[in-house]
Each structure stands twice: as C-alpha cells, then as structure tokens.
Image (cartoon, rainbow, N blue to C red):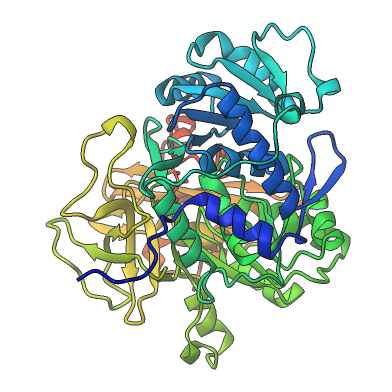
Length: 544
Ligand code: ADP
C-alpha cells in the first residue's frame, strides 16, 4: 500500500520559488568584479533566473545540456544557479584557478554548450576558447555597455543583453528528481580531475540536512557570507540552504583579502561566514594587525583542510566567534560531518573542549560513515583506532561522470581516501590523507598534527609537513615553513617549540624555511608540488 501524500519531486526550482514567495524581501548583496556593491532581493534573483531559463530556451539548449560558469560569488552567478538547473539544464561550475589546459580539458569533457564568465577571466577565456568546440555561446557577466570589445571570441554576448529581451515569467518544469542538476570536477590534487554530477534530489536533501540546527543552523535571521567560492562545490551548498532558510546572502566577489572581507562583514552585519583556513588566516592577520573587532559575526564555518587549534582559539578568545569545523569532499556534495558539540561537552574545561572542537565532527543527519582496516574490516569507535574512512548517503557519489575511474564504491560505500578515528560519541577526526601519512619505523605520524603545532608558533604563517627519506626509519617528518612578514624564528627554536606538545619521536627532524608554499586551486597546500620542489632535499643524519 502506498502512502497517500502528494508526490512532488525534490527540484531545485522549489527552493527559489519558496525563497521568492516566503522570504522575498531578504537581501542579496554582492561586491562586484567592477568593485562596487550591488543590492537585490530573492524576488529579483527569482525573476532574473526565469529570464535565464527563457534565454536558454531561446538558445535551444536541450534538457541536461551543460552550462558552464567561470565566476566569483555574486548575484548573477546565483541567478545562473537557479535559471540553469531550474529549467532542467546542468550547471557546471569551473574553478578558474586551475591551469588553462585543465580548464579546456574539463570544458570538453563536460561538453559545455554555453559558458558564462566574469570579465576579469577574459584573458583565460581568450586562452582556451579555440580549444572548446562544444561551446556555442560565451556570456560575459556584465552590462551591455561593458561588453569587452575586440576579444577575438566569436558569439560573445553580455549577460544583461542576453537576458534583457526575455520574459520574466516561466513555468518551472516538473521532471524526475534524480535528473542531473549541476556538476563540479574534483580539484585534481589527487590525480586527474573527475566530474561529480549532482542531482536535484541529492542537492535538495543535502541543503535540508546542512541547514539543520546541529549542522549550519541557518534561519531567516542570519546574514550569511560564503567566502568559499561557488565554483568550489557550490560554496558548500550555501546558495541552496540560504534559499530554503530565507537568509540574507552576502557575496564577496573576487576580493578575498582580510580588509575587504572584514569590511563586508561589518557593513552587512554578517552573522555566519564560511571558508577555508587560508582565507581566515588572512582575515585574522588583518583584524589582529589593526586592532579590529567583529560586531555581528557569531559563527564561522571552516573546512576544506584541517582547522588549526590556534585559529579556533583566536576566533573564540579574541572575538567571541564560534568556529564550526566541517569536513567534506566534492564527492559528498560536499558536507559530510560538522563539529557541533553535544550537551555533555558544554561543561568541559577549555582544553578538553578544544580537543573535541578540533575534530571534524558528527555525520550530517542522513549520512553514514565507518572506518575500516586494510582488509576492509570495520574498526571500533574508540577515538584512537584509525582506519580508512568510508561514507554513504543520498548525497554521496555513485559514479563519476562518463564512468571515469570505474566503479568507485566498495560494497556500496565510498572510500574517501582520508584516514580517521571516530570516538564513542560519533565524532570523526581526520588524521591524514592516506598518502600523506608518514610512516616512521613502522609507526604512523599524522602530518596534520605536526602542522598544527607549527602554526601555533607566533612567527609561523603557513606550515606543511612531508616525509623525508631516512636510512634507518625509512620516513621521517620534516616541516616546511613560511614565516609571518617581519617575524623571526630559527630552526632550533621551532623544534624546541614541539617539546612537550607531541611524542618525542614525532617531532620533525628538520625545518625548511621557504618564501612560499604551493597552494592549490581550492586553497589547500599542494603536497605533491611541495614534494617535487623539495625533491633534492636530503636529511643530514648521523644515525646509520
Ligand atoms: P581534492 O580531493 O581534489 O582536494 P576536495 O576539495 O573535494 O578535493 O577535497 C576533499 C578533501 O579535503 C577531503 O578528502 C580531506 O582530505 C580534505 N578535507 C576537507 N575538509 C577537511 C577538514 N576539515 N579537515 C581535514 N581535511 C579536510
């Protein structure tokens, strides 16, 4: 016997319809590429998303055809999110920080038909357009009178001219909720980029779960700043969660420096912000250096790489801002776990509570996870035993686009490539990526632990731990360090800083000071590149 409730497919168009009707007045504020601040509302976004849908119809794009974007966080990008997916096409957000060859490869692999780009990416588009035969229209996200001239790009239109003649009425079509809605390629830090194809159903369920109180805890009273780019797994789903919760959205555009972000937080009374640690590092350096405070910011969600304890402490002690540590991957839409404390943790001493806050947290409601040994046997949740982390759930990948890499699942579970512990309360902690772990004399050392200690030193801006060959122990940790401008620390001082903070045998054997450390397209340290840069490095050791 079937239930007798209405069968309404979970479509992305429902989210924008809801936001328009129930939170129409909530503002969308964008710092534009042009440098100015643009203000509109959910009503405006919904109206112009319908114009986008009509423009795509006029261009004869078929159901499931791909529309790509090379764009920063802003209102026009948001309109494309809803206009493209809502009308049944697939939004392909491209990471502009990738190498142009990789971008051309991705465009061809996805067979993008239309590509919309912020005008500051014009040189990039000029570099790749001749290699992209599937793209039949290039849309510059600009006013008609700002359309770049003499670009050499055929079929180039301005976004405003493209949607200007279109009706702002459109009946969002109903179709199978399992239809593809958007796609994102993995950033390639672990090999060739692979396409992850999200569905309307997976996106909606992810947005619902992510909005829950023990996740991002969003409501219509929040002013939300996604610093994490919309090309990085849809800004962790915030454009969707914000619509279903009716939040105000604040978009930073290309200006990610500490001064711009702080200014926006204050001017727009931001209460919740989200981004990777490197961005918050710049923000904290700016506020600390200039004696600034946050008047409205209450929470900041940090993920993408491990959040160092020094950052959690700085936000809490100096600014009264709670850090919400989160873990996820392109393959998990991306949210997998968030570190929201349980009742029993609230009365813990500061240090004991910090130990919990450093964990990547509990599974989002609807997602399951486990850790296994090399034979695939499930390991205990004791907070100590570590193993390969596997996840499953309705917003976890089943297969890559065009079946690249074969079947990624193991008995229905997706192996994340991360190594983790899970404690008795279900709090997961990443110890490392499987290939970044350091094996010293048969014992594992977590590179994350070693990096966290280094960045707690006041003179250290960035630290990355990799292994160096050792004649006796096979691998030993060394730490590459970029100092803060004007700050000084010697090799001996930094190594002494480790005393008492970790087991003696885990203290790195050497410190390598560098001008910069390679950071990838999504703000993460590129360990592979760093290893290449330090290929000639040899440990000088007296031990045989
Ligand atoms: P890529 O694998 O190409 O870097 P993703 O952006 O999908 O692409 O990165 C996912 C990976 O980032 C995770 O598998 C994990 O290794 C790392 N990661 C994400 N969030 C965290 C976190 N909070 N702490 C530690 N590592 C994290």
